[in-house]
Length: 198
Ligand code: G4P
Image (cartoon, rainbow, N blue to C red; front, side, top):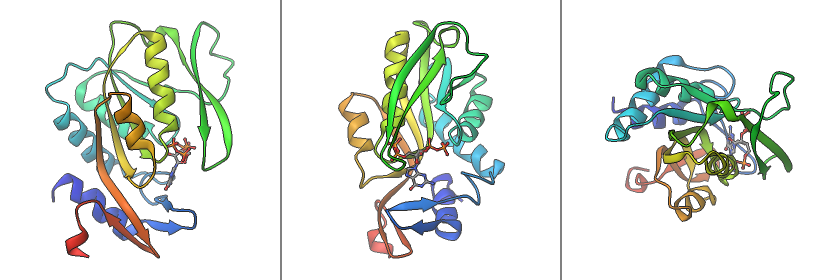
């Protein structure tokens, strides 16, 4: 099966639509992880960005790590994840950005050690979900601080009815999302481009 369809099918099978336009995908992405599916997502990101010479994958803990690491594995480049908690082992200089979560109504500071990102890097940002785009926006801020070049963003599941995609495009950054949800209707998930099939 085509890789994009594979993810859509899995969302239809195992995704649970919760109140507040939240999709629960604990079966394969946010709690239990399906490595074969994550690998397929990695292959797709690699295919989409094959013309680019990427030196680093950047994500944010925790659920972005699975698709990010598969992408890094296939590209043979390091994967850096921004940390959400202050860590005792993060002692040196840090790039930090503030990330407001609309879902959780809290502001987090995310950070990356200066050692792991610099002006020579061509970065591909990967994350599991794109909702309001605050996490990706923070990662873009961190790349700016590091003077690293952002090649693009790769998202597993985009909720296209929220503001994140627009925000990223406004910043002039290429965005590739593997599954694009246009709406929820009760328990049903509608994907962008499949209106005629539903
Ligand atoms: P944003 O980064 O796009 O602005 O997302 P938002 O503030 O709206 O959401 C905060 C957290 O909730 C993020 O994860 C985001 O990935 C996740 N999220 C947003 N919409 C959904 C959804 O419909 N379903 C699920 N399962 N998650 C959603 P996080 O707090 O960084 O969590 P984690 O990566 O540690 O799991």
